[in-house]
Amino acid sequence: QKEVEQDPGPLSVPEGAIVSLNCTYSNSAFQYFMWYRQYSRKGPELLMYTYSSGNKEDGRFTAQVDKSSKYISLFIRDSQPSDSATYLCAMINAGNNRKLIWGLGTSLAVNP
Amino acid sequence: EADIYQTPRYLVIGTGKKITLECSQTMGHDKMYWYQQDPGMELHLIHYSYGVNSTEKGDLSSESTVSRIRTEHFPLTLESARPSHTSQYLCASSELVGSTDTQYFGPGTRLTVL
Image (cartoon, rainbow over the protein chains, first blue to last red):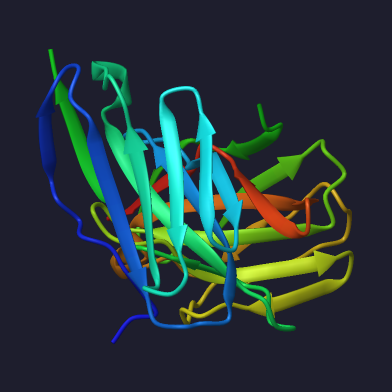
């Protein structure tokens, strides 16, 4: 079993929809949680990061962490065609080995 | 926007050739990374460096080698390329944001070995 599980999709939604992207994880030592966006043929870019449990909002994007359920989410409101990309979750072990552990990525298409 | 550069962006070469993929960052980050990513697949860490003269192998075994002689430069070398090396190679560097390392990626090099 992988430490981080993410449904690869693809996910297709109409423009203006609310999108929910999710990851589950098995290692309770993870403390920092990140969402990256990767456009086709480009490197990933950091969208948001959160520490421990709770919500964080940035414009149309909201990141949620539920450590009790080992579940994180990224919500996109009023989705736009420019949001079409692959969204990767990543998290860091709080111990000495602070390597980033990546999800597979979810492919999202927002249709005009 | 992250100032991390990779060259070449695309490379098509024949089997047996020696190649070096370049990666440079102007942010003064100590930590740098190389990932390999096949289409539709997850990122795999193949090398990382926590500073000059420090290099470590990542989670995915790779026949490539790296060097870190200068902080800003982290080249990856394949001594004898094979078709199995065909992939996208992504370079990243990281800094502490809050209490965690945040990685910034270059645009990637798409390598095709014929």
